[in-house]
Image (cartoon, rainbow, N blue to C red):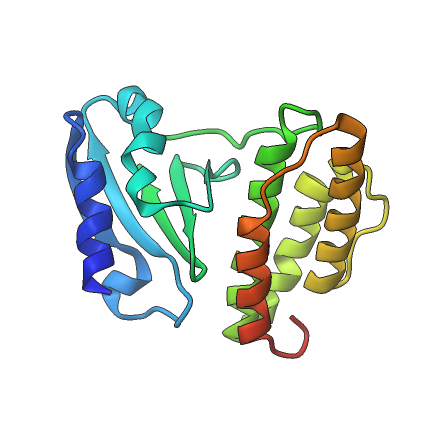
Length: 201
């Protein structure tokens, strides 16, 4: 996957306010699992300018979904591609506070949808690698930050239960709002999950 490393680095490095892009994380150290993210540490002389331009910079990667990670201690721009393959641009010299949970509305449902499927894929990769402790730790957070604000009253006890709860409620909200969200990211995550499925996933 050297081509992905070179391409993902080059796209963001082309911005005039980016002063450096370095391959980072577990893949750069050779300690990764098969489904680990591809991480890149980005240095910039003008974070606001780079942040504003990230969607256009990564457009050649043909994202199925993209977002600023809302809960991290530093800004991270996440790009979800076919595979599913996830690329993260980490702005480690910046800080941020965790963003509040989004309340469903016609304007926020697409972002909630992206956040949910990103989180489900992350949980799937951890479960497939046997890190069930991380799944157990994060399921209440997924409920608190995504599912409960949508009106789901019972915390799910598995990834499959979380998916069923979310899809049912999201579809109902689409009908209520008169909108229809793209399903490409959802389909990619579900197909990926089926390929790597293990018990308790």
